[in-house]
Image (cartoon, rainbow, N blue to C red):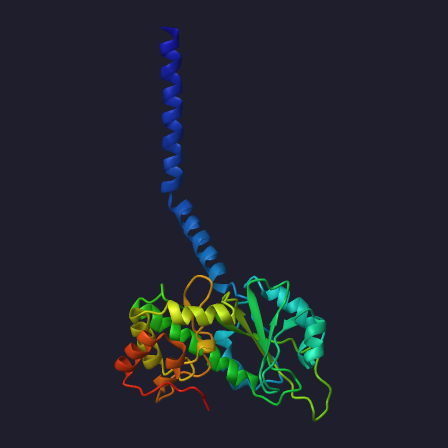
Length: 293
């Protein structure tokens, strides 16, 4: 009987506590304070600004704003690494300075070509750059490459060709301007480089074999759709649409897009005899072109 009495008393105390808590939450003052706290928190989130790259005074403001949407995100995992590499010295001064900064670079086909570098700290990315010794407007070239990649990816997604094709992501990285090239006519200051996902492409020999053996009529139908819609005049060359190690064709030359007419016959020489005939019927193009001007 005593235990029943204790249980009844404890139950009454607990019920009273719940009632008191409910009264607190129902009180106009508490609700008003709670709403104020929520609004303040919301305002803090709205006022939180994502860090931005400092404006480079050596770049025309109109150009800077045009490129800004395509800058490498400030919170991208490579951002701090790039800052450490390019803030330390003028890496883009010349080929030797690029190599001295730790980049393994490609052998250029001609002096006007951009430099493609691979750095041990940037394991899944490539850096493409024009050097200060090259007289080239790098920002325009990079703008075309980034917007071309985005447009091609959108076309791939629209048609559902994700299993057949890939486009490495590309971003523009504004170079720090704490180190500048010498004030000398032989130097042309560069203000941007291009960051590109490593597509893990097949080597030249394996890629040639894949073009002969792996391309089917289905592949060519899809390729024709993308090339025609996007006006990809340079994507008829095997080196510009190589296979990667996952078996996909990668659109890596995205600079030239929305340009017509397209010379479909340039692709023929890379295909098997059967696929050559199919491509000719599909596009109405002529005989294979052995030497491309």
